[in-house]
Length: 90
Image 1: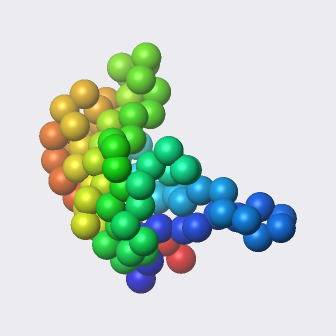
Image 2: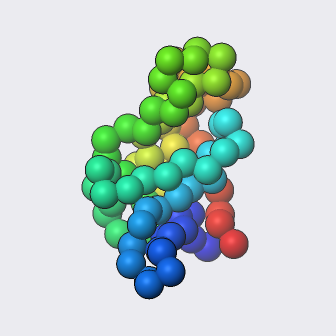
Image 3: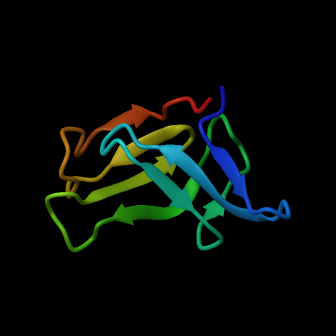
């Protein structure tokens, strides 16, 4: 099953890729600022994703590599410092 969803606009042009984050429970969106290896089952995005940088109570900071999400220690949630498999996207 794919771990990444490709989003397009009404004309079919690429807009972004999204993953489901098991840490914060939200979608994380990767646009043209990130590189993507093109593998929807074992995605790698670079650089890291930092969500809510200025709010430690909701910050989520991670790397997505080889179909896994590596949470950095500055995350607010229980998975800080851990690496998990990405969730499937239907």
